[in-house]
Length: 370
Image 1: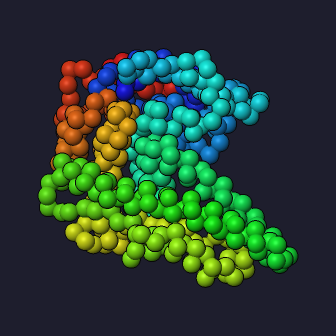
Image 2: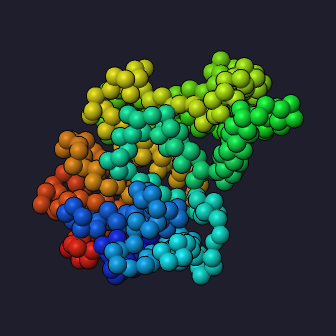
């Protein structure tokens, strides 16, 4: 899949931008606050219907304006024209695909698979379990519509069950307990399916991590991902164990008014040579692992969906030594089209480049071909 063109209107510092991209590597250079990362953010909007770093769409609108617009053309077997429009007056966002309005984000997730590597990825390996679940859920949601729908259904069930737990805490009645039992069965059924998806994913994903790690570091270390869920001893009785734990935790859940059991509490453990990366990994190992995860995600999605994802790398090379940066740059040759932000073009000696690569300069929201 190729993003051939991007048009922006009132998008952060971009009052009006129209740029055509290379089908290979697109290097986007600019100082802080000039608008280079906004280009990646706009591409992410096209692929997912949302921003990766703004809490609200209103944050993205250029100052003193009341709307923004992002348009892009994706080419694969056919060409798809996508448009995202937001009005701050209506406080509403619209997504159009080939001039047809798309009502649900879930209809778009996975159609234009995207992989984004940013400095904030440190939270995946160094942060809380929720960050690692978010990473895995994002990959699986793009790879499988069924997983995405299960996840949405599970989160709705969690919300309903939370409301009921708080209701029981305030007014304990037998009919509410019966209702809780029904929601518990629903939670266990949906949650068990999610767990099974995640188990299969980690088993397969380990090979992608190993391959990407070898390309960047060599074979000095052996990386792996391990899924820590509610009962690691028996993969055949997940539903039964789920219900058993819900019964065991019932009083505590009612007292606290929260759901204490399920895949929303699980974790993914990253390791190197059998050692827990989060606990014992160096800063260099963490950074390398974060890059490896995104390359592994790219090739996993490519093979799973039979679509080549859009690969976005935001200010990645500045934090890496020249050897690793050079290996990563060389590895990008196997990716196809990619978008890479840099602070400047003064030293590109460590980057592997071809004659078809594109150099763009961004200054005060304007894009210039270098």
